[in-house]
Structure formats: C-alpha cells, structure tokens
Image (cartoon, rainbow, N blue to C red; front, side, top):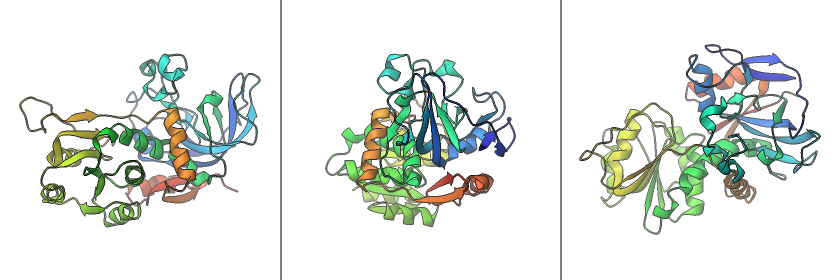
Length: 347
C-alpha cells in the first residue's frame, strides 16, 4: 500500500510503498478514507534528531477517519464495515487515566516513545492504518470522512481547550481566539455552541478573519500595534474573561496577557515557541490561571462527533490526494492553507 512516511530525521515526508498491516490480538485494521494534516506534522518532519522521543521510520497522520476492514482474533467492540474516527493520543492502556479514556494525560506518557497515531506510531496518511484496540475508535455514522478526520485533533483539541474555561464564560463574558486556522475556526464554533460569551477573533491574515466570521465570531481584528487597546475597549475596558492562543509565539502571548482580565483564563494551545516569565509581583494579570491543554479525552471526541453530525460544527477543508502530500505540506508551511488540509487516498 501507499503511505506518507518520515524515513529519518532531517528528511521531508516520503510517498512510498509499504506492506499492508495484518491485525493481531486486539488490533483493528481501518481502511483510511481521509487523514488531516496539521502544524504538528510539520513540527515532526522538521524536528532535529533527539528532539522527539520517536524512532523513524513511521507513517505520518494523526487525524484519521475510515472504515473498519478486519479485526484481530482477540478484538471486540468494532464491526467490519463500520465507519469510525480514530482517537489519536494512544497511551499505555493500563493506567487509571487511560482506563477513563484520558490517554492524552497517560501517567506513563513520558516512557512510551510515542504520543499516538502518526506521532511515533504508524499513522493514517496511508491506505490502511493499524489501531491497537477498538477502544480508540469512535463511530461517525454517515458523517463525511473529510469532516470527521479533523475532528480527532483540530476539533477535539479545541473542544478540550474550551471545556476547561467554560466555567468562566457565562452571560456577559468575552472570549478571544488568537489564530484562526484549522483549530481556531473550530474553537469559535464550539464557543458559540457551548457558551453565551461574546467571541472575538485575532489573526494576521484578512482571509483568516473572514473565516472567523463564517465560523460565528462576533468581531475580529488584525494584529497591529494598537490591537490590545482596541480589544480592551471592545470588552468595556475590563479585558477578556478567557483568551485561547492557538499560535503561542512571543507576540501572541504578549497580546494575550495584555488583554486578559484579572482572574481570567489563559489557554495556550499553539506551540509557536513563545515564553512567559512568571514572577510576583510582575506584569501578568493578577489572579489569572494558565492551562496548557494537550489533545482531549475519548468521551470528548464522542461529543465533538455528535456536534458535527447535527451540523453545529463544520470544518473548512482543502483536499489533496495522498500522492500530493508534499504540496499540502508546502502550502501549510507558507501559511496558505484555508482551514484544514485533508489527504484522501488516490483512486
């Protein structure tokens, strides 16, 4: 079968032939219908040796939707022909958190040598993907595969990030989303669907602000020298109750702390390399709380899929055949992607 693989550190993604896997024990083989591409994939292929705990070669792709093909002899909980999305952050499967569907915070994550499907383990940028257990599969019914695949990270991570601050977003509150890309445009939709807060969007691209408005943002602005002051004015001068930063570089973190209300919630989702210096007293808003969410839980993925099946969530996508993965990677690097890139197996 064809697959897009990281064959070694310092090398770009390679479109190669590999053996089709055979499920053993509790494993489930899924025929891939769509695989999302995100900035995390770029970080992986750009990483220097010894930066990540992974051992190439492995197939990329951690956002995967498809159809159950075959089951290993000890597998249960899935049916051949069933359409599913793959829950990506595979943990040890043994600790209390994994048992509760919280593999994203597995107690043994630091010892595993992988972070999940496509992240140290063979992923979904292929014609088939081998899943260790049916517990990692969430049914999607008739939901289109190009909509379902991005839900497993872009949708799930955004949902998990917003769920952590929902308590602060009651009537009269304001939430600011910084970075309206594959995750940010879904975060806006989730905030509108699950909270009564006023949602403001910030980006450096006019096209991203247009996407923010299509996603339901009440207002938006480009990042300029006076953006912080303008956003504070938009909150009546008090600041935002929650800021969700899907970029995470020095400029966006500086903006986030400038506009955050005292006692507010700062959620850093993006891995843009920015840093916050915490000191007391200091320049940070008094009483603020910081969270660094990683992916989300399996029960939350079920909730995200349910939102998408009702039409509440819609992923804006650009599709590419699997053989054009390098083109998709290039467009993502250039910041030219609209919403989420999705790879589909060639005919």
